[in-house]
Length: 365
Image (tube, rainbow, N blue to C red):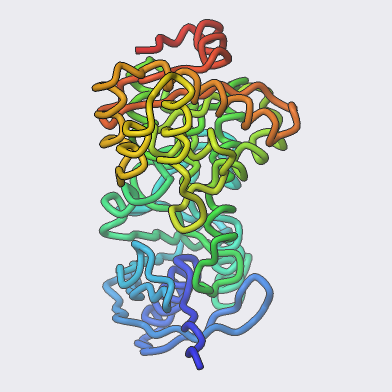
């Protein structure tokens, strides 16, 4: 039988544990383990890497343990410093590597440290237990490698700058399921909406983002979909968008042409069959169709398309992808589709994409 996957601790639980250890250090205690309460009041016991006190400042470090969900933060130090203040209340500060929120639409107000409500609640529980509401405490959370780690997250797209977010709704990391990953993508759409945009640009990955930026599309309008194109279109509709532009590498979006909206290669792959069918529609003979079917990448198939002067297939496939997209969300929004090459240049744009680009004064290049 398969062994169950090992759970870990969120960055929020790690920061809370470090906060508690830092407060204990000010009392002359230097624990190797501390127990904190989750937002649901479950006890979580977490190892402490180090704890020390220097003058009026207590500092502790917890190494974030993601269990078997080995995301980019696994093993990184979470460092918390505490000091008492004269003004009653708890003040949370972003130290090195913890981001600051710069756009509306997230759970934390603009200008505040990117410490989500769950971790804030956990830290407040420690404050009330060990300090008391009538006293003042300043807590600074640092994640020394956070600025580099943030490049591997969606934080830049969501307007969190200077580092990563301190996250966690339960304090416990359960190895991430596909559903959890999908849900982690959706908040991008609320941020785009809160910034006042009426059209959202959906990009499965870097190539789509590059193409969008070449068109003069602001980075703030772009939301990454990964392989979950259908899910993100549905979420965009639920947030209130009635116009979308789907931009990505042809190899990804050809799958949408054939009606696949979860584009992970193990879930869907009819790329060569789709390209071969459109080549045949444009006069390709059996030998050319066979050559396309023998390809393993759309770039290789594109060489055959170019050799045979069958470039008309691209706008046709983009147009069909547009039809499929609008049908997928039952006509609740207009969806334009743009196929891009590896370097981000536009190969083809559907009719709706051209309309949306003209309205927004974006330039299809």
